[in-house]
Amino acid sequence: MTSDDELRRRLADAFDARARAAFGDHSPVPPPRFATEPARHGHRGWVRVAAPLVAAAAVVAVIVSVALTAGGSRGGRHTAVGGTGSVSHPASHTSAAASTSAPSTPTKPVHITLLNSDGSDYGVGMPVIAYFSKKISNAKALQAATTVTVNGRPAKGAWYFEYSSAKASYPIEGHFRMENYWPANAKIHVGIPAKGLSAGPGLSYDDSLTLDFSTHDRIVSTVDDSTHRMTVTDNGKQYGTFPVSLGASNTPTARGTKVIMEKGRSICMRGPGYHECGVKWTQRLTYGGEYLHSAPWNVSHIRNGVDSSNGCTNLLPSDAQRLYRFLSVGDVVTFPNADGPAMTLGKGYGDWNVNWSTWLTGGLVPTG
Image 1 (cartoon, rainbow, N blue to C red):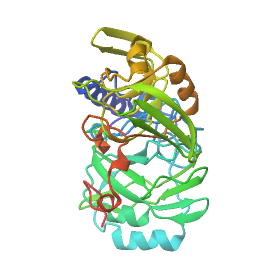
Image 2: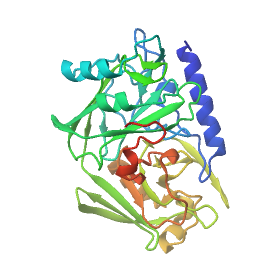
Image 3: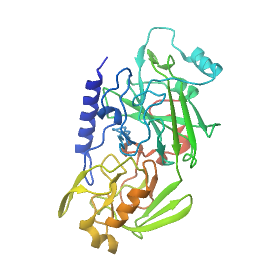
Image 4: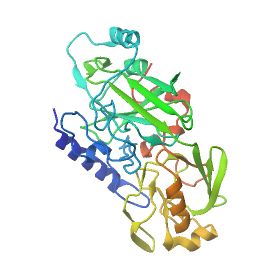
C-alpha cells in the first residue's frame, strides 16, 4: 500500500500541475487537507488543519484544502482527515445493504477519505466531499447505505462522482448533497457504512465513516455584471451591496453558482499592468484561481464599473476586509450574468450547477 508520505507527495504534485495549467488571477491550487498535514499516529487518515476547500475532478473540486483556514474542531468518527471510521446506523439497514451488495469473492480494497471534518461549521452550500483510492465502477450499494439527518430527522441526499486530479492516489471523488442547499443553522449527520460493500466488480470498501457538522445562516451573494455590484443576503435580508470589477473580455469571470472554498491564503497575482504579492482578504471560488479579494491597484475601475480583472471579483479594500470577516467557507456566491464560460463541478465546488435529476444519475459512477 502506498505510504502516507507518498500519497501526500502525489496529491501535492497533482494540484501544483493543475494550478500551472489554470487561468485567471493565478495562485497555486490548495491541496486537500490530508495532502498537507502530518499523519496522526494510530490512525489511517491525516489530521486536518482548517476548513476546506477542496475537491476536484480535475482536482476538482479538491481542494479544497480547499479551504484550510475556515475549519472546525478536530477529531470525530470519520476517516476523513484524521479519526477512525465508525458507524452508528440501525443494524437492519446496514446488514440489509451488506447482504445484497457485499462481494462473495476476494476483492481489492477501496479506501474512502473525506475532505470535511467533524465539528466544522460551514455555509449552506458546502458539499460533503469524499475521495476514493481506486476507480470504483458502481456506487449503488454506497448510495443505498448512505444516510443523512438534519436536526435528527431523516433527509434525502445523493452522491455524484467525477475524476479527481489526485489521479493515482485518489482517482475518483464523490460529492454528496441534498437537492437544495442545507438548511440554515442546522446540525447535519451523514452516515457512510460502506465497509464490505461492493464498489463494482472486484472491488469493495475497506472503511466506514460518519460526519457531523453544522451550518450557519443562509448567506448568499449575487454578483451582477450588468450593475457591477455584489449584493449579500443573510437569511433573505440584505446585508450590503458592494461595487466590483470582474474579468476583462479576454479573461472573463465564470458564470454560475460558486461556493467559497478557502480563506486567507497569501497569494501573488499578475495581470496587465500589475504583479502583486501579499494580496489581502482572499476568498477562493475556483481551483483555477478566481477569488473575492482586495484590489487596491484597481480602485478606479471598481468604482466606475469597468471589468478589468483576470477573472477574480475585485473589491475595494475596505469592502474586501468587511466581507472577509462576514463570509465563510461553504457560503454561496452566484454570478448569473458574468461573461465567462459556465461554472462546472470540476472547476471548484460547482455542485449547484448540476440539476437534481442529473445529479441522481451519479455522474461518472452510476448510483442506480
